Length: 127
Image 1: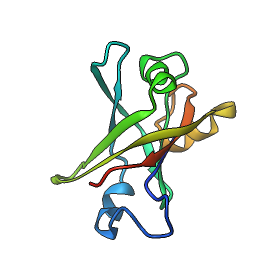
Image 2: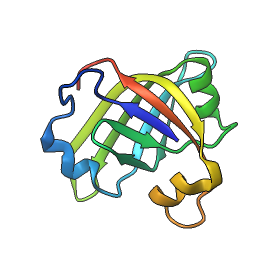
Image 3: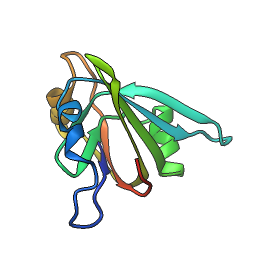
């Protein structure tokens, strides 16, 4: 699982107006930096816990490899019913953890989705 931290202080960083979007079953588009410096973006399932956007990544996949090498990441999501309601979060991975038994993936993704690794990303830039 990838945890994207948006709060490195005690203040709320993502405004409350995005709570509805963060509570949807939308996909988040996660952009990482490829081995030659090129951007690599793909949609992933996510959850929000009030501080972090948590995403699932398959171990050994290009995005996982990219984040092991360079933890910079951008995550964007669009409300499924209102495309003008969107959010982008930029940050850095601070930890990645295996999804033991696929429990995290089972919480956020439709049945049949494979196990993932989670990462923690600290937000470093403004929205």
